[in-house]
Image (cartoon, rainbow, N blue to C red):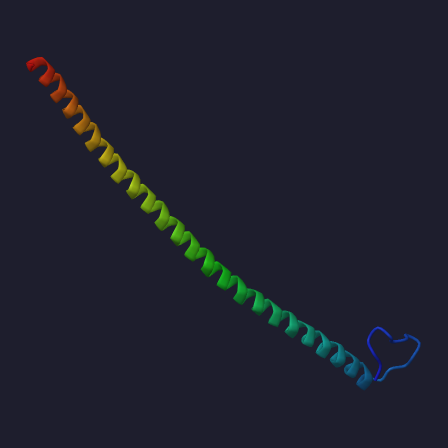
Length: 100
């Protein structure tokens, strides 16, 4: 059997040999395509895993952002109470000084 790419045009080739050459090349191409498909599947699996990790990280980031917002709101409430108490104490001090 002749190899594809080594065929000399001056040689006579029978139909059977042509079919064998074609099938040989076709089989080699299919083998290469199968290997590429396997690698592509492996890459797809890895990409899916990575995408899952990214989604979990994004969910975690969103939860953290929400937690930060809640903490800021609670802190503002505390500051408001402190300001109210400070204002009340200040007013009480002014009143005490006025009464004394």
